[in-house]
Amino acid sequence: MTMMRLAKTVVEPTAKNGFIFTLLGTKWGFLWLWLLIINAAAFLAYGLDKLLAKLKARHEKVPRLPERNLLLLAIVGGGIGAWLGMEVFRHKTQHRSFRVIVPLFTCLWLVIVTGAYLYFNVFR
Image (tube, one colour):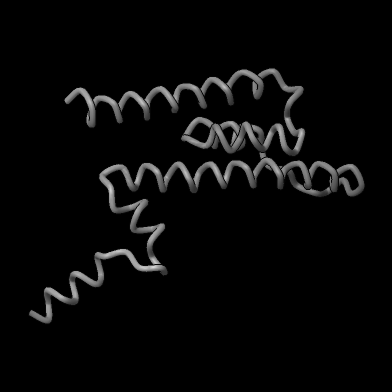
């Protein structure tokens, strides 16, 4: 009886773990968590690179984030964060590769996730 009570309290959401439980409590939880983390990382990376670009104008030896790393964040699922980072920080908006690849992979991820969700939850 004690084990059942302990297991029930660990699994049930509380005020402290409600969001994480809601996110990870579904079969899609790890995908949503991945997309949340990678999009936040992409947004912050674009902001950091913009800051480093401004610092590099004053000090030559400031390292920047490689463009391929910024694009890779969009490719692995951080397209929305990258796109928002481009718009909010006005960074990399003049580069054709960024104007094409970031929206392309954002749309591709949206189609893949939506298609997988519909396939596994609606049509199957």
